[in-house]
Length: 111
View 1 (tube, one colour):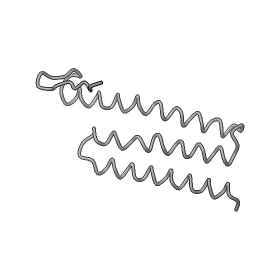
View 2 (cartoon, rainbow, N blue to C red):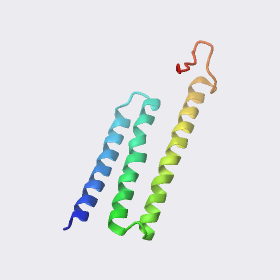
View 3 (cartoon, helix red, strand yellow):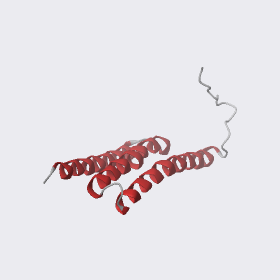
């Protein structure tokens, strides 16, 4: 067992732990909006770690290495779209519309 094998094993182990902790976080939240925050590590950190592990094992020029990088990038981009769409659908289901209600105040950060 060489150094690359140990690094790959560590990366895969950390990726799995991040996924498991994200699942536990989703289960422990009070509502769907809070749960959305816990999906990010599982869909951003874990795929990046796994892509790095594949690139170390197979090489960056290999077909598996290129595909793992593409999949990781797609998961990062598509996670933001999915979280936004889920939050928007939940708000429409709860409130009946997407816009702010009269009793809600839009906060604009100071610059």
